[in-house]
Image (cartoon, rainbow, N blue to C red; front, side, top):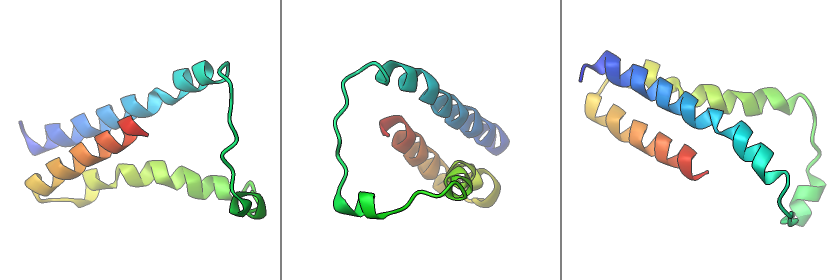
Length: 88
């Protein structure tokens, strides 16, 4: 498979895994909940401006497509990224 095709495949695969967020969110909204917060969670204020920082996490998952040139390293990163997203 060509390197360009591998990179396109990673973008499509990551986008597909990210798109699973909505159905899982809908399903889990009806399930019983448990609070797992710690004192540090209560002490940390949430500000709307941090939404942009959180959004950058999605952007950074696509960075290997643009940055990594070594094919073997790219394949390892792609597998690790997909496994991480699928598990989380």
